[in-house]
Image (cartoon, rainbow, N blue to C red; front, side, top):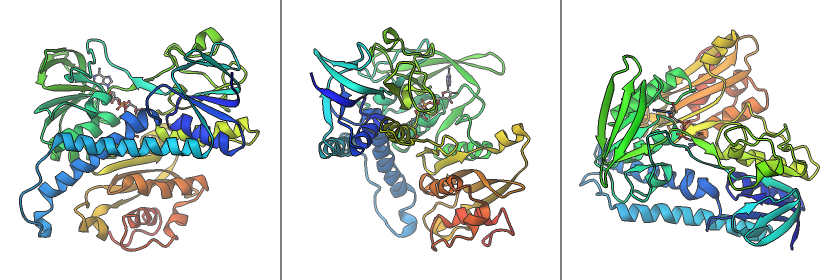
Length: 464
Ligand code: NAI
């Protein structure tokens, strides 16, 4: 029986980062993972493969729509779906092997198999029991479906996000249930590949919780790209044959029932914590009814020596939130300060254009009754964006009316997922719009739009 300072259960972005930081801080560390490769949902069937497909199909979109304008003439490329799948898999393999390399480099033992905690201080993997002074549960989440929709990724007709990444062929007609992050990203992929995509969403807006102006603009832009939206529609269920599905939904405004046919239905209505089979209940770890592990501010559960992070605990189900918690919990275990600033966690949707947000929305501030200013700048005034057909969209900075302190930002436009971070850093330092506006930004860059939005909070932007 091996003895460790820390055993991490799960090697997704929360778990593998926690393991690496624990090892870096001098703790003897092992990580349990039952998948054949490290990296969890994110690297294997989430963030990374979807980004490969988004990249490939964006190139196709560029070839079809913008190449001729730039003097690049000739036939647009045709799609070889199996090769695109191989490319996607090679991206995944490169990343998962990278984590394996980092485990070796940091002398972290990979305990292969599914782990459970028979008692505090012990982790069982297969027939072996290992001892650990500390255990970190980083078991992640799984897609959650709706009643009346039976997911069968093998059959490939009613699928979840995992199935949608590896469809046997490109569907002619696709229904996406849920206009959240997964629905819009994967819907974009298949729309660009020529599928007729219809998104059916329960709420009256897409991307719930996001800035209202961003929601409206993104929907308009995706519509222009050929995606259809049915909002305010409660999905009742779907029937599948071997090759087709019929979806039934009710419109909330008049309770009328409708049906839609498609080759594939993607169910993207959220995820749930994956904490089954770990023995947490038996151990006495407090959880919610939905299996979310309860922790204190330092990720300690109700059982001494057992911690939990990532999608298995409360908060946004985001890889980077899990990573931050992974680093912080390692520090706590090593006797250091470990901290996560939950007020500054960016969210990104990798459609084209990208959408990124951090901090508060106008809607939230209105509800709070807090006085604020908005500085907005359109990418139409950004030379770099115009040069690359990306003038649609804007940067919207929200600052405190009295102090000018940055409270949030909402960006829709080119590289929004990267631009958001200069706002994150400003917020971490308690900075103001003036701080951003006084910082020299290289020309010509997309980042200049962030500076212009900051200038718009003061004496005004230059290029608008
Ligand atoms: P989500 O919570 O983002 O969106 C689910 C959508 O489904 C919501 O708009 C909801 O109103 C709708 N919905 C729920 N029930 C419905 C019904 N009966 N009929 C019609 N619509 C219904 O969930 P999603 O997209 O599945 O993503 C899961 C998690 O994974 C999220 O927490 C997300 O943040 C995370 N994720 C993040 C990514 C990123 O950061 N780029 C990429 C992929 C996933």
